[in-house]
Image (cartoon, rainbow, N blue to C red):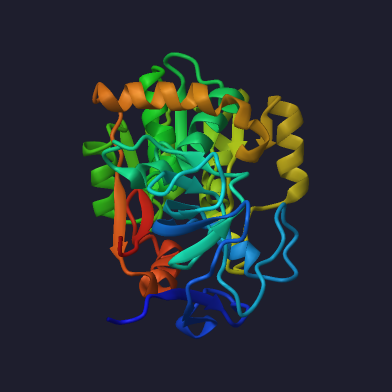
Length: 340
């Protein structure tokens, strides 16, 4: 019988621009052994998210420390407890581990785990629509965006894990929702599968003109995931009193210049139009997670909200799948599935 091994993907080089295969290496070694008070987890699903790119730099001004070289990057996982040396977890328990990382097996002290129901039908959703990406969309939109009935909401990266959920929530709250995504096919799916009122391909010519036509009454809420040319098109259309939850600025994550115009003009527009722009981290608001989970589950159960995932098989595919995030290859949440 082949000895069980712990497959890991290590970050071996800081990416220069977009991540490439040479920045990573697949490493195999022995399965770790838990000490007293610890658990051995077997990861079943790994979440891949754009914020990880910033943590691969060692000079990035960020809210989280950089990943170490020659070690697996962190990342949320759905995992099963395969060995427990704690009284509060049993072998077979299904959990969400927020930073168990790019590996098959991980050790945990149990302090940051979220237990999942044993009969959960789609465990991968605990990383997406029922996890931190869904919570990010829900919190950012409802607490900062504060959408009101019949307002116009614009969502960038509308086909992504966060944007796809934020736009659907906006529709449920009575907004007219305009998405912005990359490619005609994605835009078609955003409208037909997710129920957005319109979706614009940012790669096509004259985004600013097309957006002005789609949001002819101006924009009341802009859910910002991208920055760059999308932000440039949106900003002149913001109405007085507009709200802008800033979730991410993906256009600049690989070091590309973020052409967002004069900072003076941008700041002056905040004063003239009384615009609220607020960045946020979901980790600061976890006391509301139970409320989010109940509401999101109800919307899913009643068919009012759809969860879309792009699931890729095999931990060794994590580097190429991660790179594809910045090429817009995924629709909805991007997840790696590991062998059970």
